[in-house]
Length: 134
Image (spheres, helix red, strand yellow):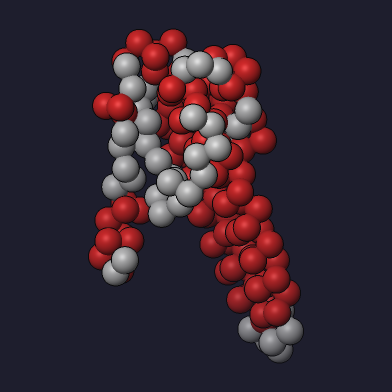
């Protein structure tokens, strides 16, 4: 995957709304909104376990939870290593923390806004990685 494809995927996340019935999306909108909060990825499975849209939202929420965990771990280690550098270390560590926060918040907002707009969009670059619920 080259840089242009990555930029395109980040700026235009994959929209799979047409794979779901509009009635399914409409009736499970609250599940989709709640699944946007990573720790609540399981809620759509409890509220509407047989809904394909609810399963999609649960998968995206679980993907976001895993992404947040990985980003936090990598950011913490990288920030710790960078903080050793005299003078610039603190600034570089802060930039890494800000980048991790921006990516995590951006993905969360993508899922939240998509659910509010009755859309089904995948998290860029990692949206296909976890398909735990089918």
